[in-house]
Image (cartoon, rainbow, N blue to C red):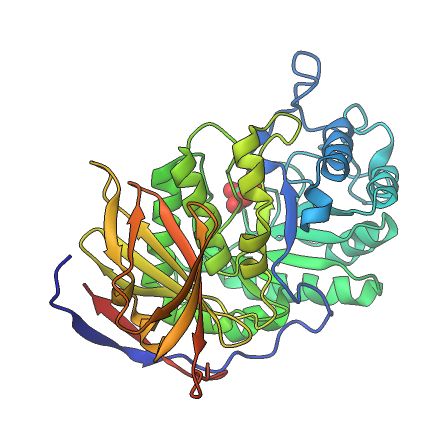
Length: 425
Ligand code: GLA
């Protein structure tokens, strides 16, 4: 490890987090399951009944979520994505579920999910059509919000396809108001900034006042390059997006693809660790009926979930980069710090990273308590500022740890402003 440490102070200051959407929801990052990445728009129930978008799929996921410890771990929302509706609205202009694939209708499905102590999410689009070509909500915001409320739905993912970008703000705000007017608590998940970025820098104050979480960047795919691109985007826009996150409103880097086909176990650990550091919604898109024990254990890891759900509600960010390592840090409650060290070198074996090179290590003065969470749980005990501890990190893997300073002068994480100190290692 190079000992030349260059300090680069980024120019922009973090501005105070603005007011969150005042619906009392998403005080912590949402946890649940969402069908899209794994099941996409599979509507062929004749030849693929187990994997098609149908009421059976969500009922089975809800069953497993209760039986296999997911609910107990905190995963609460069972969410429908695109391709659930009939291609036609009903005679009264309301959306209706495809009758063949959802014979009981959404209200009955919601009742079923609620009977398991879980919540149901649904999907619609701010424009004329959804991204997959199903009826959009443009011109029907009041009706659709009321329909979802009548069905006892608990979350709406509102996509941004097929609308002129200049109308996005108005559309997302009007749907937010329409949901509010129904009087039902419906968590509002937006994609407003994702569709606005190609044209202009989104207004995150307005977005936070309107939505409970919001997608900023491309859809996640089941690959390490996709996960990396999301991390890169987030780090390179962190001065803009990080300050807008807090209880009630979160940046959404898209679904967890852990338990699928494209990520090695180390890469799955990296996604889980970094999503927790980013205070991201933890919406799994995988097949919970058939998931390998290691992925299950990782997704249900209490210590990582505790970081994700930390009551301070601050999003972490990249604090150092260099020598094919990245360090991400998240301030936690009780003056603790979560640290993720990601080894981006995709060749060779485990590489060592000196813990004293973590920028936040300066708070370990004169001593701190260190708990290693990934790649395996280990109490590292009391460490001194001069600690020579080396973390070994596998290629595309992550070491995740918490640091608790033991001193009279504990760090005070400023609530409203802080400089992003970027350290090039
Ligand atoms: C967009 C969204 C995805 C998914 C699809 C459905 O691409 O970003 O998350 O909802 O639409 O068509």
